[in-house]
Image 1 (cartoon, rainbow, N blue to C red):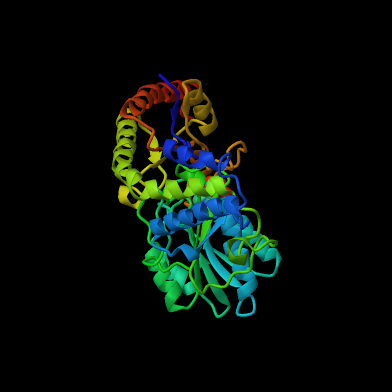
Image 2: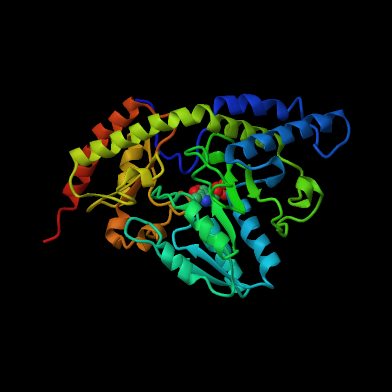
Length: 387
Ligand code: PLP
């Protein structure tokens, strides 16, 4: 069996059509898009085409898209750039306890700058209480930031309902939609968003490119000062090849990949049902109702086993999955997402995230269903039930 990659929430392979489209921009079309000569004009056109492709995927206009280097940059830009503009109105922002570190650490940085941040709790399935969200709003509140989909559990948040609350209270609304892009339909208008961050490498574009949606009329202080690129919103010579790739990945996400989502969902369900029928003492982390989760994500706790040893044993069989988020694996700290959901530390340590993608097949899932229960039983024998 070839290696099986079930870690698409960490990163995805570059889609062949994306690669084909972007390669000429490293050699043939190498001009700086800011240059007025023929070489610059060729790449400037490519940049604007990509802007249209990104905008079309999320129902924005091209002028509302600013290219960035990654999801983390877009999030920092959205939150810090807003903080500088809004600080005279109020210095309170509301987010959730289960955001990606890109949001949480940016909020901590704002706190050291005198901002007050409310980190909303979630319930056992990872869901927010929207009444609590509304009751947390004070005179000082100027912004809400809630992720569209959680990277560890796949939990989907009711973004349109939160957008409604933000509008009612005239608050700026940002969403980290890094995990949602390419996995579900997205409409920033319907969701009432002012700002939304995208990362290319999560859906078939290369690493090193992303975008921030900035609703027309939303003032934002730049994060990177310098040249006039991106209409003075983000300085730095554009990563033309990456941006071309991002554009094509967005176009594919709107057409080809959306047809794949149903197939990916059925593979995820096959894995979930198969594991529950073969193993006991298994717990799902995230909403039981599958429609409230990203279609590609499955987070499970395998009682009495450390997630790390399970990952290592899976790796020996060529199966790549993840424990906690990609950015925090490598450290043995429990996932902040699972602990916010009230999952006890032992159970959190025994959790594994499987995240599927378009390149996965039924045979691969069946291979995991054959190997994983054997590994689990073997590891559980080494560490029998206490008492
Ligand atoms: N937000 C979420 C939900 C993520 O899963 C990630 C990456 O894992 C990021 C933000 C950061 O994106 P990037 O790796 O492009 O900086």
